[in-house]
Amino acid sequence: MTTNISSVFDQLIDSGVVAVMRGADADTIIDVATALHDGGVTAYEITADNANAAALISEVRASFRDSEVIVGAGTVLDSPTAQEMITSGAEFIVGPTFDPDILEICNRHGTLVAPGILSPTEALNAYEAGADLLKVFPAATVGPTHLSSIAGPLPHLPLMPTGGINIDNVADYIEAGAAVVGAGGALMNTDAIAAGDFESITETAEMFTQEIETARMRNSSSSS
Image 1 (cartoon, rainbow, N blue to C red):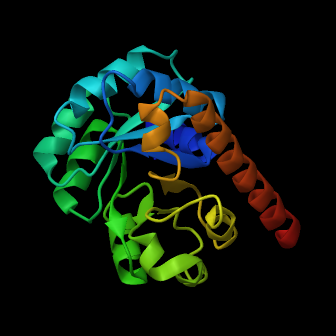
Image 2: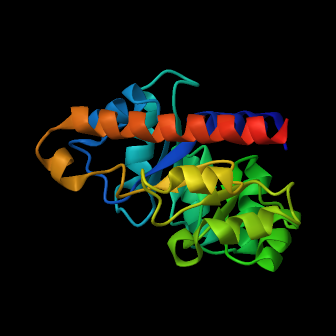
Image 3: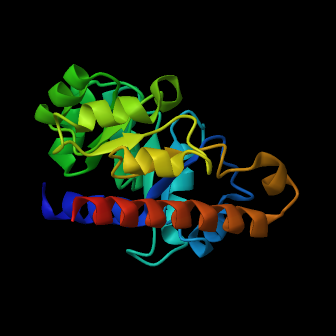
């Protein structure tokens, strides 16, 4: 990894969870990001299927000090979109699938890239093609045991399960070998956001980070 990618990777791991901000609204995104930050979640993925994604990425980055949060783009399906998101300031690129052209663009710009994979073969192929992080998607379809089945023979691969991650199962994914998880609906409560109840967003973020920290401690104890 380049120095910049290594730093971004470390920040993602430190956050423990990447908040997938699908359908983010310009009127509330800073309030939501601040609420997540206050709860210990400092990595935000603004999905590229939002027409204002590029502007929102720039806005969120400008609202926090450097290294305070990390902002990337998700649902990136092609290399032109990856280029647009990187130009807008995205610090990492996430996709639901593995597209070598997207990896090439990200590698060229020194931007962390996390393509979507599901099988051990896809995981290894993507990693050897230049992926920095591997989005195991859709995680809910296969569950934590699938993750541990990949991590067992391929422990050097950094995995980020996404899809169906919530408070009740996040610890299971961490214990199964996840380096970091992606979570959307479980963190981004649309009713709370609509009601302006950002305190509940902070409370949920705190629960997520606590579950992750505890699971990591259990992993550390069992391996020592």
